[in-house]
View 1: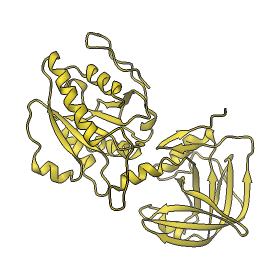
View 2: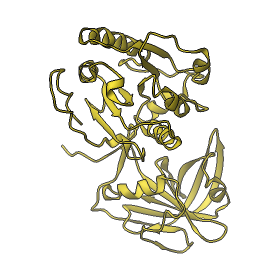
View 3: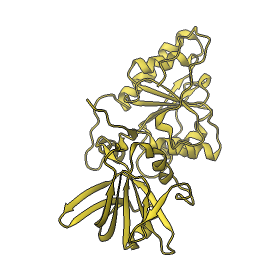
Length: 340
């Protein structure tokens, strides 16, 4: 976390640091200021295009209780839009986005996706106080949009900041959020993220006998007699048919030193097992070597539940390491145990 940047008269640039929330946003260089637990404001594009004095704007946002993140190396390339979309998906909560009118054309494709909106609101800092086009509002249906004139003089920065903060308080409030049936599913996702979980890698073999694995935190014990456990798999997963057809699978609970392993199995790549040590037991389902705990299971039952499958397995064999601490996941970030 960076402190708020220097005041307007400072000559030095704020020190750049990597943000934990951008582990999966490959291709974007991100720096941040403020408390990571505060609501996120994501600044996109060259900072000098966002404000006549962007340092004062960042300071005002931080002092107002916002976690400011900046990605300045953003262009209109397709890979930049894809990286931005990944970043928005992996952030612990929907950010308010602030961009310039010159980068708007590259930002819109990352936001114009089906399903829940990836941002709480969008602020466009423009040379003039132009209205947002109806076409843009249609593309970003459900995302509140505001255009703010870019401050040209230092005495106009306060007015720009006041307009920005006022819009954020209306559309990205700091108060507790509420979800009701039929409202935005991302709000429900954020609420569910308040439940801390462990992190697992679920594995099986495909029809050709090749190992398959993915990161999951929707894991739970079900019963001791008989010994049943479950995990949930999204219907949209590329591996859903493989697990639906598999007679056996394994669940590997990760320890704090296996965060890189979680990242490997969370990303789309051809061979996730290439640089991971693993072994097999009775069924052939891959068992990750050195995991905190591993459970080899036979598929007992598959229940269709909304947009997920609930896969219940009967434990045939288990192994655990009692001297390690678990890798935890809470509000979209990896965590570790703290003992009092």
